[in-house]
Image (cartoon, rainbow, N blue to C red; front, top):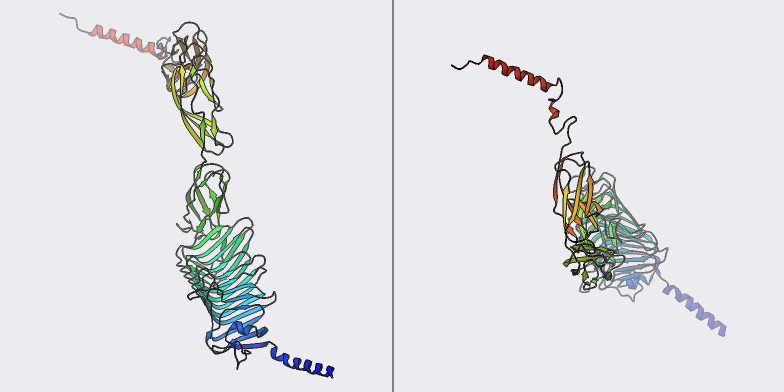
Length: 614
């Protein structure tokens, strides 16, 4: 008997199970109830209520106009909005597809809106599944994207007769983190968004009969970074009244963005027909209408570099990359820079980046050339601030004439690498700056003011003003220096000797004399018997200002000679001399003697023919 009742209970459960099965077709209505079985005669009220009662691969139909609310789809299904199926999304997405790898979702004849007191975020979000097909649908008013098709593992998107308008970011966004997101967009319009069609890494898209207009930044926006790839084929499209018609950017190692255009009109866009960044490429089949676009003729203004300001930064700080956008270009753009950039900073693939290791102001010109050979240039300035640094010591030790000067090395505090030192001003004669140290023996008393500048390996400098006092030693003798030339004027090709003589003081001076022509050092000659002599030859015709400086020694002060102006005449002609022999008068039978004989005969004839007085 017990076994009999068990069989009856099992039979009753089996008989009841068909009532719990999901239907392959369900309905929703504005007057329905989600407690209903979602049949045509007992429809549900929302898509969310109907989807749980619809079998995988089944369909949900709308019986009459109404708002059927947001829904999440995790299986193959079709939603047909019929004559008035709407989804009003407040504070979230309208339809979220998170389905299996083989699932296909079809959305047909729907109207999705994110407008409201709490705006919706995204119209349709597709994160996983095999394919999404959207037909005869309007999507508008979302904070972010109208359609976001970004499955991590890839998938396929089909848009037919879809209008996406008034969204805060993209009308349609396509990309995949690790797979290929294929998109096919036909007979659709993307208007009034920030960007119409937005392609990222992993996107492979084909567009046919698309209108992208009134999008504030770009009608089509394609961008990849660091190894990402994106490809787009455009056939019979109209890109008009956008910020730019088409933006193609490819930055970073291994990235590639390629757009091909055929039978496409790109006109009346606010900034330019195209904007290319890095190695982003736009190829034309030659049958497009590109208002203001570049061509092989390269008319003036066809291509330009978009204005950009480079932010200042500190030396050693990471520079936030700045992309140089080229407007109106076709093909692939190459860029070059006119002058050296700071070490560690670079222009690569149309992007300025790096960590500058040198300070200072850098002005340079960037030139961009597109695939048609059209060029554009822009001057830029980069300011790299140096760290705080200073020079030590703060004061210098005094010195005495005729005695070796002793001073600790200058120290460039806060500098990096090897610093170089330079002096503006005058040191006492006999002293010099060598590798950041004052060395030598001063031979000139007095107070000497100068400014020392130290520049480190990163081109950053520190300066300090000093006064060096040199006392006169008890046995110090002040002499003078006289400079003379062996011939003045002289002829080119002749030799001349310059002699500098130390005059005054007791004893025999030593040291050297440096001879100058203008500011050019001719030679340094050791003083012997108070004189130093320099021989010059092969001077070209002209006027030379010659001078000399005596170094001084332990007892004699250094001194400059008064300059001498040397006049060099043109070289003598062959056979000429300064004694008049060149005229030929001293040559027997020469033309001079014949002329003299004729003159004497003429005078004699005049005397014989002259009348005598009285």
